[in-house]
Image (cartoon, rainbow, N blue to C red):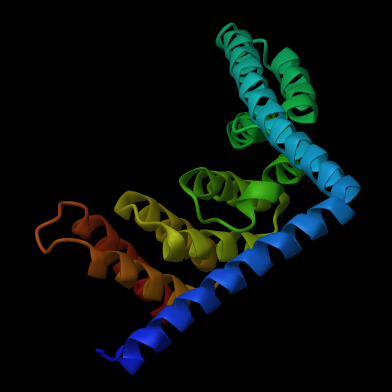
Length: 231
């Protein structure tokens, strides 16, 4: 009689053990489910509510964005017919109602600029501050530029200069960097810091091409500052 190989017996035994473990696991899971049927029901209801809530929130935000876009378009029409005072009121109402939408930043830019144009820098600072104090995104950098202008109107020269410098350091647009550095240099020079102004103008020159036509203008400004400092 042929003998069964020992490895075959061990393999068969291992398969039976695995099957037994699986069956035990299924039974335990079934028993737990029966014992916790109420908990599972509540959990299922909560999951459904969470999914439904997520869909509702997405749809709600989408609808709010559509309404915000329509409202902002109406405000632009008011501005186009020079109804700036009415536009200010409408934009303030817009921010209260649609401040959580994707159009919040755009509305703040428009309202901040209207306040600056009407000589009301304090209101401009209040409107632009939430997005302009930490410039990073393109719209935040635009807000920072208006914020710096508001600081200038208020005579807060150090804050204006710091804001312009922040724009120059964080912007990826050459023209935006140049404008910010030039504005900072202008402030430094007006406050008696000719050396600091020259430093910033040199940064502007370093960023320009050797044959850039505007190099002459900035070189002339440097010469004027140095001449005034030595006289």
